[in-house]
Image (cartoon, rainbow, N blue to C red):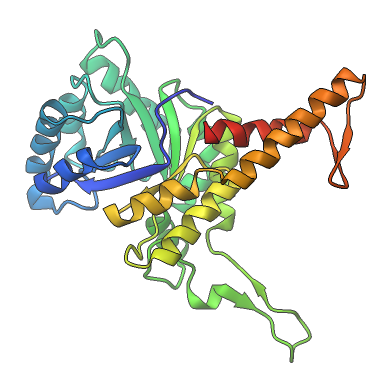
Length: 307
C-alpha cells in the first residue's frame, strides 16, 4: 500500500465557502478535500478555484492530507483547474470524479505533470468510482498510471447510476434492508446496496497498492447511523471514509481505531505464534482456535492501525 498521511476521516468542504474551509483546516480530520464539483453551483466555479488556491497558500493545514476535487473530465472548467492546481506545493492530490476510462485518467495525470514539470513530487490522483461503468473498469483504472494513490467510492452518484430507489446518500433504501418472510419459508436476511461496490473498490485498491476510501453517510445528524456506517467500512478494511459535516469526524475516527480489546487480542496472537516458532511449530491453539501465519498477518494489521 502506498505510504501517505492517514485518511480515516476525510472531510469534504465546498471550496467557495471560505469560512467552512478555514474550519476544515482547523478540524481534527485526517484529510480534507475542497470541492470544485458537486458542492459548487456553476456560477461559483471560478470563485471556488480562486478560493481553493488561496486557502492552500494561506491556511495552516498541519499534517492533514489536503486534496481538491476537480470537475468531471468533460467539464469546461477542468483545463483551467489543472493549470492552477499543478503549481501548488501544499496540494497532495487531485480527486477525479466519475472516473470511468483509463485514457481520461492518464491524460489528466500527464497534463498535471506537463503544467509543472519541475514540481519535486508530482500531484497524485485519487479516483472517485461512482458510476456503473467506473465500477466495471475499476481494475484498469487503478493500474492506469503511477500517480494514482487512492480509490474512493462515490455512493450517491453510484446509486443514481444503477437506478437504485433511494435519495439518501450512503444508505440502502428500505426495500433493500430485508428480504423474505416467515410466510414465504425464507428467513429474513439483511441486504446492503453498497456491499458489492464497496468490496469491488476495496479489492482493486489492495491489488494495486492504493488506499481505499468509502463514501459518506449523508445522515450527518444521525450519530448512530454515521458511526455504524463508518464501522462497516473499517471492518471491511477501508483506510477511511468521507464525511460531509464536522459532527461526523470524531465518530468516524473512533470507528477506524481498534479497541483496546482488539489490540490486546491481536498482541496475544502475535505472542502465541512467536512462542510456537521458538518451539519449532508453525501453528498453535489459542482460546480453542487454530492460529497460523495468516492470523498473524491479520493481527499485525490491527496493531498497525492502533499505532
